[in-house]
Structure formats: C-alpha cells, structure tokens
Image 1 (cartoon, rainbow, N blue to C red):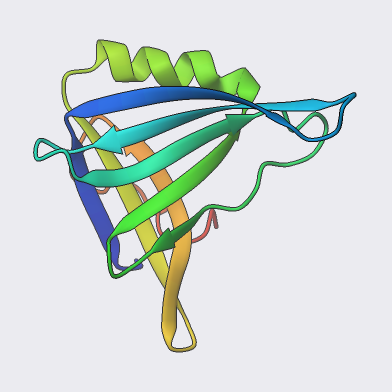
Image 2 (image 1 turned 180 degrees about the horizontal axis):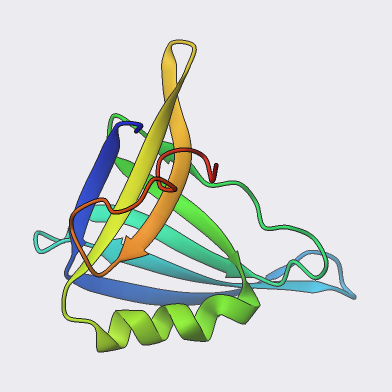
Length: 125
C-alpha cells in the first residue's frame, strides 16, 4: 500500500463560481473546501460539468498533505449529502513516488479513519 495522509474533516465551505470561458459558454463550477478542527485546509473537491469526458486527475502537495479531487457535477448532491449527514469524515490521500516527488494516486472521503481494502492507494488497481 502507498503512503497515505488522513485528515479528520470538521467543517467545509462551498463556493459556486461562474467564470467567463467564452461569451457563449460560461464555465460554472462548485468548490468545496474541506477543513479540520483548527481551520487548516485538508483539500478541495471541485465539481464541474465534464459532459462525456472524464474528470481531471487529482493533484496535491505532499509537503502540505493536501489534495484536490475533481468530480463531474452529477455527483455533487451525493457528496454534499455525505458531508451533511455524517458526523465523522476523513479525507484520505494516497501518494505514489514519481521520481523525486510524491504525487496523488487516490483520494477518498470516508466515514472510517482506518484504510480498508486493497483498492485504495493502488491507483484504482
């Protein structure tokens, strides 16, 4: 299993952006900022309309222990429901070594602190 960072999520903020991509095609996105009890950033979940395309790959900063995950807008309601209904939540980031740096392999929002299953941290293998 890859090295992981696990954050306990205490709060979140939601930002809805509508930026001008082209005059005919505005670009809307919803950004959820995840925070711990000390108001430190744990990561971001970004929701966009990707249409028939796949969402962007996650990225992060291993030194800060934070990461951003991208999702299609169709998953926003399910994600926000989990944030609202669950009392204990954990933002888990699996890292893989790529040369001298560590990059994000997987990101997960979970209701249990421990890492369960062989899937997490293996790049979806």
